[in-house]
Image (cartoon, rainbow, N blue to C red; front, side, top):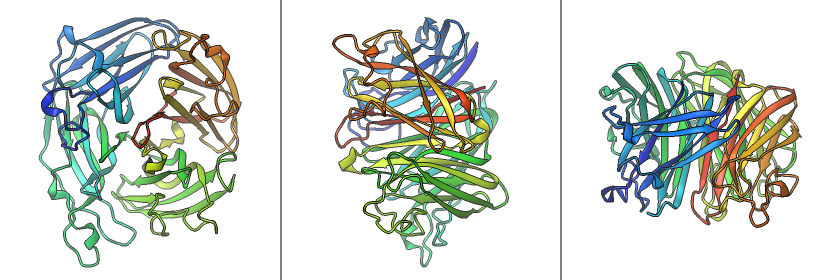
Length: 508
């Protein structure tokens, strides 16, 4: 049986109604999770989900079985409507007799199974590691805090240590304090959550010229363990939630499929972390796309030094208006009319990791999401996307595909609707596209044109009344370069973070 691990939270107890996990950041509603599992095999899949409590204990009555998931098909599980788990925090191990991929979603709940923002997603992991790097953790960082969720996927009890490493800002100030708390034991398959909300030890000491960072922390964290573990980080600011997977490896060339500045109220920040013992010289190439950007098809190239064990942040939000913050600010004379939507490539002389945070201004929906930078070595000719939505009760997805070498690729995207919620159930359709500048975006939002979307305007998904689609996709390279991809999934909710963001799965 092939296994994926996910850390799932089911927080429905009245006493936790105003909390996010154990962190105490109030969103006014209890938390739950949902997840999608996609069958990547060549035969029907029999899928089993086993849940574990904080002591690593599971019982047969908590498990779920999903027999005969069709080839290319997927299943959706909503914790808020499930009866197998009680209130609390659980980890999950998903097993199948075919290759699978899984994505977990976090959201608040109104009490009747209706998901409420803020939303976030992360990808299930097929294996763990004894060393995991977290590029972004925060304490009191201008309203931002983080929590780290760690699951033990080894063969025995894990002894886990975490080291917090502050970043050195462009102004030369150290944004935090080095801190190494005591080790934490985690039973097999169990999970634990470490919140940074109350870690006053992380706050930067008072230093002349660096007063703005006193009592604050922005930096990385390194997890080490005697057993393999997986980790997920939640980043909170009131009303927004960003989630990303911890890194168990690094690389010298990193691809970031989507980056934005001044893009209809959307913007991004880039964090580059150097886990090594020597400084990294990193060349960053920003390339705007040919359709959505102004000006189109342009590039900006800069170089930054990332100190050993440290990180560098590039910020293109509404206050990122100096060269110390942004590499794109001031590049073009008309900043007000400048619009960037495209990809970023990092080339380093030593292995690095990177993540991108995406956000939107309140007028653009106050969205928020994070995805992991992808190494060129991860690029393949086939990718699985466990969750695609179009016209699904206000939910829709934006699928971004880029080539890992900047070349072009012709790809076939095969969408398969689920057998429960879609208007046209268990249907498969193929669509073929070619990248432009190594970039391709398929957008299923309500304002998408037929040229921008695949599912939204195709009558094949219309049952005569509705065209709701929830399902999965497989992307295959017909000709050209290998690819990577990621997904933004959103819901049309004004002024609230209704964005789920996750990395797609490259298949060998």
